Length: 195
Image (cartoon, rainbow, N blue to C red):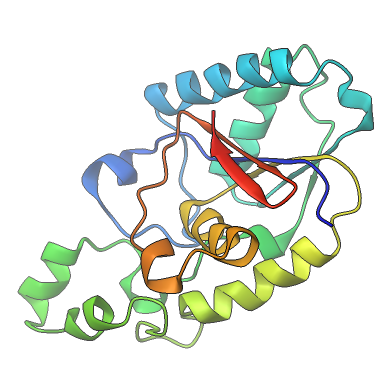
């Protein structure tokens, strides 16, 4: 059984505000995002009295690593005491990264229709693009290797997939979920709860 896991989405970026598809583009937190990371770290400081028993892992992108550093600082831990894992990277949006849906539709009307019909199975154009189904294989591989209590900073897509894999949420429901940046998801004995 999966040990206790706390999952956090990285704090807000300017691209989040603009509703740009970030995917694996390497963006930075904004002021609100740094405040969200601090808030989540203070909450975890209350929830985790003995952090030495926890593994701390993040996606390798700047926004997730900065979030983890701020979380650890709020927990009164050395900021760099974590590792990264590329399996926790956000779903890759291929050629769509950096665009808004509005911009994509203006440039090529109807181009986003296939994704709206099957968000789980659709991969955007581009050699590195992924579907949520492809992301699920990456995330499942990571989950299978979790052996100790863990604090994980990752992305909205990864958390959606984790909710599908761990809690059994249907894929169509999981991909439609809004994932907050100012809360912590606790996964414990197969139950998932936002704190």
